[in-house]
Length: 339
Ligand SMILES: *Cc1c(COP(=O)(O)O)cnc(C)c1O
Image (tube, rainbow, N blue to C red):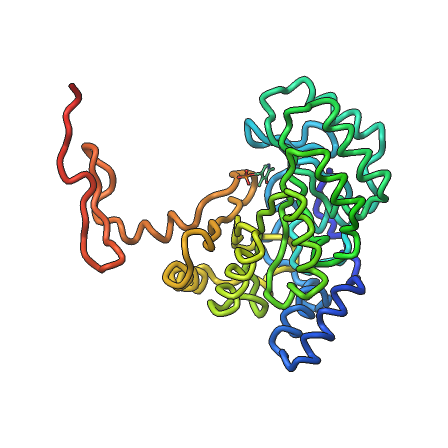
């Protein structure tokens, strides 16, 4: 990955399954849902406008590349970018430069390069297989990649990061889920942004994974004009939990080129998150996070928001905070000296 300052154009394409979701939303009179879906995949003039704070590589991934396709930023986990290709192209994509440049699946030689690094770095316990979408590869390419990774490291936890259950639920045949079952330990990390993305076909694909014993965690991007209201997010996270999917992350947008139109101002995001916290259970609540621009890694915005309720930070083994009852509480009430 060699980001520079030339902006590449992200292809414009939406899958048949996603277009079908839009038609279905329209047919049942869900105008808001149809618009939320359409907005995600329709290129706009705004994409040409690059603001000062936007970057070609907003997460600073280039500095952590240990092979051209392997990003090792956190001690115990790494990220493999298997392809730049996607099943549909989200206009707010933070990896849009990579996606636009690398439109093919990782080659066998490139896999070996990454595999050699993973093999000699046993403290990598988890590998995120992402892209692009790994499921744009042919069945042979995709299964070949995961088989190879499993062979070099039988203990490695694989995290398949994909939007395929939404964009291409038809891919989740018995053959594919059977294969995923075989290469466990594996989690599917599902990118999903709106309840209207969970049509009958999508639910069937997700259920097939869950029924095969493949756990799913979701990640959602907070998007202006798509899901930046509490009702939509409450519905999304509750429906996911009902399907057996644990909401993992809600992400504040990264500063990728031409994506300003999708960014929710932090102040609005803060109010939204507070409302979610009142309306959702701990189980249904994702972590609210942002990648610090330039390579600082994921940072919990929940903790920033909650810090408003801290009256006294931790000092001498105690702190005081405002509880949900509006009163101030201190933990611990008594200081226990070491014996
Ligand atoms: C998000 C991310 C991970 C995974 O982090 P978790 O906190 O375990 O979700 C790993 N590597 C990179 C480069 C990432 O961006």
